[in-house]
Amino acid sequence: MTVADTAMKPRGLGWEAAAFLILLLYPLFPVFEGGFLAATGRSLGDQFPTVFVFAVLALGLNVVVGYTGILHLGIAAFFAIGAYAAGILTVASYPFGAPFLVTLVVGTVAAALVGLLLGAPTLRLRGDYLALVTLGFGEVVKAFLKNAEEITAGTRGLSPVPPPTESLDWASDYRPFYYLTLGVLIVVYLLLRNIEWSRLGRAWVAIREDELAAACMGLNPAKLKLAAFALGSGLAGLAGVLYATRLTSTSDPNAYDFNRSIFLLCCVILGGLASRPGVLLGVFLLVGFDNILSPILDGLVQRNVPGAGEKIYMTFTGWRLMVFGLALILMMRFRPEGLIPSSRVRRELHPDGTQT
Image (cartoon, rainbow, N blue to C red; front, side, top):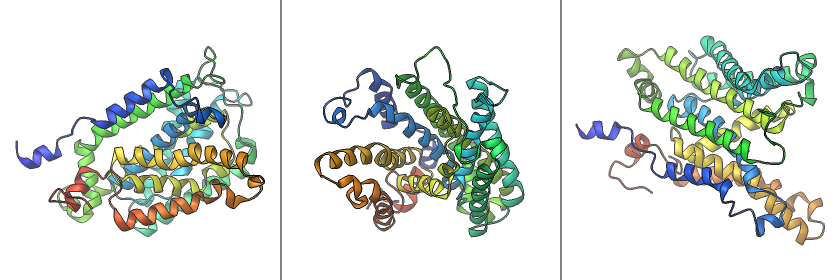
């Protein structure tokens, strides 16, 4: 076996396995639920499922942006397709009453099919033109969700989306949904790990690095891009079903706007393009700040500073976009490969084994 073969061989999960094990054990030993966190009235375990859902969504975006090099600015549209598929199939105002597993499969497949329909005529475009198509598609989906009130209930959204089963207390006990979303995240993570080191994954990287050279080597760029687009869209639809089930509603169509797509793109860039561990870290940092740390700090400030709740500059939530923007600027300046770059990127930027 050559050095190159060894470098290309998939390695064990390493610290990721330890992180998943800690997350699996956390509900059994909720060491951070008392003391400081209890004083804020929030449960850390109850916030984790939202982080897991967005991690699945970010991994789907990473397939398109990280592996294949396609700038995708409309991932929130496929997220919405999964969420509204869950709503249509399960809410009482529709006659379907589909079980959760059926909803999960249909939402995933529906988003993947829409990705195929969008990608087939447009993936021959390159660069900014393709990015504009995905951006425009996201805006079209949001406008459709707002205006097709007979189907989507407009700005009210579809509700209530029922829990996966009636036998468990999903409302007062966070653990069933915690383990459901964590299990889905682990399955998606391992699936993408195997795909990344397969022939398909290496072909995607070849397309990303040099599309013309890959085509000269016999690869079909159009079909490879379409496969990545469909897989990324399907994973976004899967996350959308989990999101709607988590909220018991499809939420307002504004929850699936351009800001959502950019937020997920920031998670991928912060962690490291084409790096599965990096994407998870980026999601835990940004979504964790947005959904867990920021509300906790806001609550502490409002309780200790009179009138702080009336001043947006006295809340961490009001500074979130500046914090995200500053983090990205610093990343592009000092560590453009991301916090945890992929092994390929690490070897390209630091062939001597050193990192800045």
